[in-house]
Image (cartoon, rainbow, N blue to C red; front, side):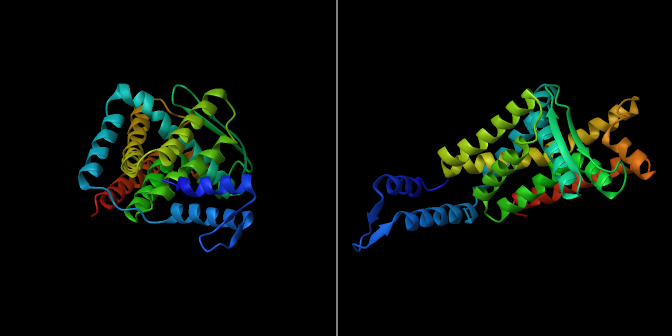
Length: 268
């Protein structure tokens, strides 16, 4: 959690104009602000102690209960949709396409619209980013937690959600992203280190586990004649490769991320 004392000293400096250090030297407002920013940054990139093993296992169990039961999954899948559509949007920008907007719907579906060539590598990468994004984000989060960068994980998530918020084009999507960002902020700012660790591990486990289920759902939907406009089918039309090949890629990324990320989280 960020150092509240640092923030409070900055506010006091703004009111009084300056302050006096222990040695009697006058400390200017600008110097105090610089020290405050440096202190916050050191806290964000600093290394936090690893939680106990039981907490890591417990958060994995809670994440499973948020992914496996169908009734609960219908609600929690919204978080995976945020990562899915965010992946489309981020890769569209990186590949040079113009991102027009993102919509998130109450039925847990989403839509990302970008402008550019309707074919080529940029379009292929953008289409492939959706189903792989939750798992890859979970893998990256597991690496950060294994390295002890819990605070960096929480504030990195806030930054990504804030960037995504600018591109949301419907009220439900706006509300969903705001609530998600608020949850990360409140946990990182107001709670104890133990609560932050539990939240961080729960989020990462959820992304790793929740990144697998949508691929199974897509395969089942296509088996029964649905999903013909899915990401896999769009990729098939773009590349002349069977949609089954792209499904295999989605499976490989999600399962390998779960295996590798799980080992990092469990200290393997």
